[in-house]
Image (cartoon, rainbow, N blue to C red; front, side):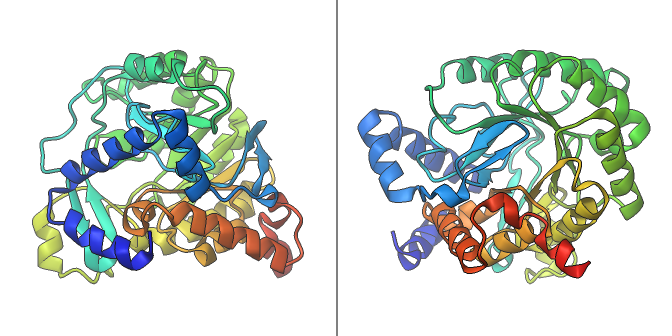
Length: 363
């Protein structure tokens, strides 16, 4: 499918409510990859299978660095689809210990002028037990799957650690790694858990509950001092990595008229508007702890050049969601082919050699 054809299809899809389109598109993806012939054909069309893209990160082998960010596959219903669709891994969730409906609709909005989205989904999901059941039935030999876990809305902050631990115990044995989400703006009080005093016992509870690598996902709206504090805590506790960043609550610098944006209400903004801050946070994290923990960069990545910039800035892995929506089914393949070309152009023989290269150049 050409970019021009997908742009036309996107205009047609944008005539429908965003959440409705999400369910229709996700259903089509699952259908296309449900049976072996469909998976094989999809893989042939969409996967950039290049040895130079393979990397081993926190003990897990990834066929390619760009993964699907959390939020698309909340219940792990498409765990077998994301590999054939061109991703090197996928992050399912966010999953909570208890099933919950999320916030009232409408709760997902498009900003086409900014190629962005605003969501206030509120961790709508079927609960950790349902996600665990789906993961238990995934096909062997697939791409790595990370389980992103969050706090159940009705659980008080004082009980957050035990709530996260329930999800961790259910999903840990079935996932390749675990991501602790304390940075969504759509669960009241959740971002307060990013404060080190609250975050330490929560992360320790998850670490005590699983044997797989554990990462923490942070917001772009943290102050630089708080970013440093979380980074230092990650090293202190022995976390495998940090995912930077989640969506932002900021609304400055948008092409969409301010009154239209205000009318949409609260929620996390994703896509190109968060790109500069996500890159800034990545560089800060790498300078502070990049030699000690793995960094996964997410936020506003649309092109291979932008993906390459994140690798050079210190990201071992990348993620996308909004870029996939606006970029279409060949988006992951375009990113991966572009990265492979960049690696060879600059004389690298593996992806890991390029990670953080800009920092050594600056030095």
